[in-house]
Image (cartoon, rainbow, N blue to C red; front, side, top):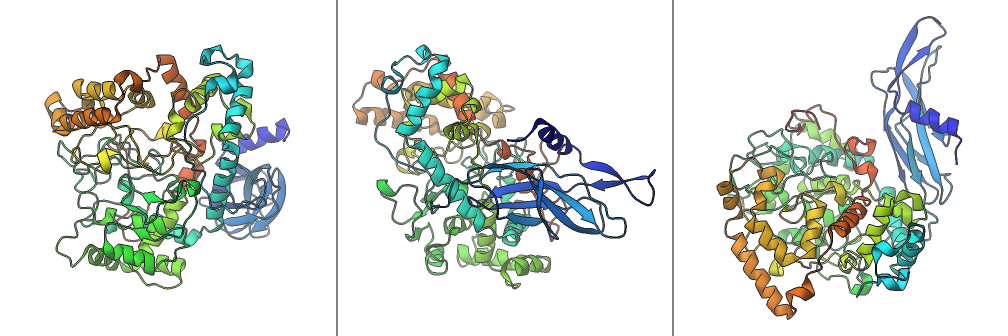
Length: 606
């Protein structure tokens, strides 16, 4: 689309934060002028792209900004936000921004970083479907590729074979639905509400003892909004500013009994929240409506929150599931605070809301039009912030759109196996890679909730596989550190469970590698006996022999599948990207000095 010289220029300027510009006053004395920073482009429709950026650092007298698309200036603005309404449908566009100053000797900065996006093909899709689907049965490799031997398919035939499977699984339509869904959310984004939500999400003032924030377990720079721990550490951390590995509450068995799920793409879920689906729609979508936005009432563990969400929040509000979810970490004693001693958990939440200092009121006024503070507003703001964590652009989706060079041969073979002989698509169909249901197989259990935790027979909500390559450790208890180990579990569930407990794999998890064998066994507790007995019951109830259950993946097949799964990661979801960095507030302590300005175990800022 663009000439080599243009691409070279853009890639060069994106790496140069400071430039030298000569003024008319002194041709021999250059002046340093910073470029605008952290430009992020978001597709809003077939013809609209929203742009936001940070002002140049340390530059006074900025008069405005010039907006460039594909190397040509398309507009200017005085603020750090712009909506391009003349983008071309179904086209890839490259954006950058420059700043200019006031005065007789006007200066223009060099270009910001570039951002590349592709617009929707049309605006015919209403954006009410997230790409989830439930399908009975899986495709056979021989029907689409002419052989059941994955390695017998010539490299030159992989794309032909894959295109047939993409059609079979209607992945192109599903991707159109998901992209339209995300674009709809982005059209509804409110920058002021997101800014308030970001500050609240990172505020330790929402915890009982001012020692924990939501970001303490869900930091954008770690695992797409997780913490990298098997079992999260909430309150009473020995180092409250530490995020991820090394964070400890001083006990062998962490008080939080589950793995913290990623925040990325949480707005894609339309039926439920949490591993155990304790916040969900009262009426689950029928199979024909899976993945479709519904106006059904919300059900939560608390009657007061259920009433509030169904009577005070419109059933068409796109944030309502996330708002309901936001009520519960605040009142989880091991996570953020203990409502004991208050009239109700909701009374405790309002106490926390009213405890916010006067310094917060300008943020609430900017977001809501007045300075009133209550917990429902806090939940709305944090939900708006969480909903902005949308990362769905990945090599496999590029491949679905026809860019066959985006996947390697190994990744293509992994995709073929995923959708056929491996059986993965039985549970992870559609472009959401989950039907938003609970289903087996049984995972190893450890920790404070290791016995009888969760839904029927310990079957937790099947996670989406989007960005799964960066969200380890895996499972509701974070029991597997690598994708390869997860795949091996599915290959032979009984053998995997026996191996996990028999070989004390808990001690091999990064969070617990510093413990001795006895301590790791203490983390397991009675969960090993419980899970193995439950697995035996499940096998007996199924009436199938072990030979019928064991898939017996070869090491090469495991490698193929892992390679494909890693191709589901959006590069912009990686730590250090501009899209991730804008989700992290400035390290200024926040409105009241209680901001969680995280560091890792090496002491480096996140």
